[in-house]
Length: 278
Image 1 (cartoon, rainbow, N blue to C red):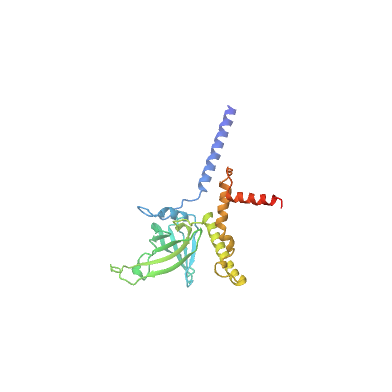
Image 2: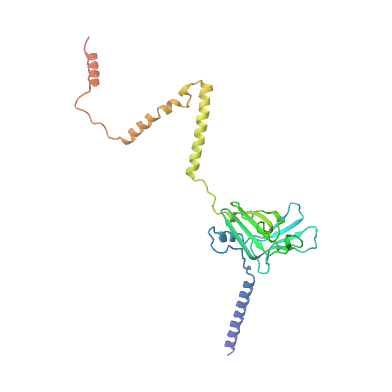
């Protein structure tokens, strides 16, 4: 019985350690990340491209006058962080960060080599824009090979139209720009080895003809067709190729004829004349 009790205690201790290990491992896992997505049909594969930015850390941006600092996080890193874009005025160091846009109903759209994300439900304006909620827009342009990129603020747009004017609706938003490889739809094309060799041959041939022409013209004093470098070689190039082809492809020996040609007979007569006594 004592042995059985010890075995049961060991089993319970082992199960407890396994449970602690699993709970610690679960608690240390990275929190889920959520990116804005395109609703409905996605012909430009926008959702797949925007997911490439899920691991990007927060971007810190300063405006041209260095009055405001912005924090922009493309994808939601934590469920508790609901604000995508924050603004802080440097003149008011004790002030809180003000929300420009949240992940709620954030929408992304795009086309060839560009993406645009709209973050809605920011903090309301206090005095202008009819006290509407702030909106943050991030435009991502294609920059092949750039995994991080640099974000900058383009403008804070505010028009002076009336809220109920259908011809000129009231719009107020913050516009940011980011260069990143995630926006690219077409991979950069590379020259094939054959194309590189062709370019090299064209360049070398052009240099050869130009320098050879100048040398023949001004150093040798050649004129006309003689100005072409190595003119005699190129003139006989066709004949040389024909001879080479004849040598390589026509290997059969010619059969001896039963009669002699006139030239051979005359040559024999000449040799016979030299053998006659004077």
